[in-house]
Image 1 (cartoon, helix red, strand yellow):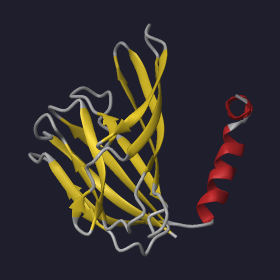
Image 2 (image 1 turned 180 degrees about the vertical axis):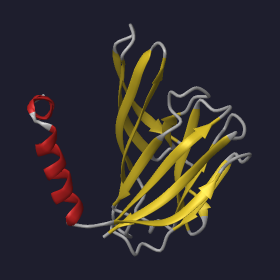
Image 3 (image 1 turned 135 degrees about the vertical axis):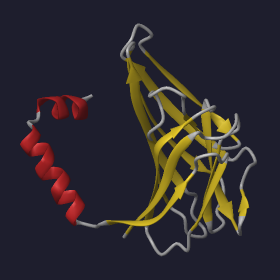
Length: 185
């Protein structure tokens, strides 16, 4: 709560100065952009030359209520129930907030044909052999009824070297959108 209080009481100059200082410690490099229009899956290969990776969905719309995010080991999706996660969701409308958690076959992320959840991102670290990868993700959006956002985190119960990321739309094809892969040293 103190972090939220500090954030709300800070002025934008302080926030911008802190963000600039953090950014100068390392730079995000755009590694690849995939257009997912008409597709129901996308895959990125990585060589672990970066310490942290980020996958950003831009305007990924159409037919989906969830995007499944999975790690790849040796070119194959890791799709058993080894993804532990917890998610906090708040809604600016009348439904308030909720917290959920579980173990699943992927790290879940909401998506929606409206403006709600078509822009979201995953940040993944701990991808070297012998460590369990961790992920943080958030998403936000809204329509005429109010805004909504979710923040979440998870760990994968796997210690093999990660060789890529897989995103899939289990409910059909995306009608528009791009996924961008970034690396940070």
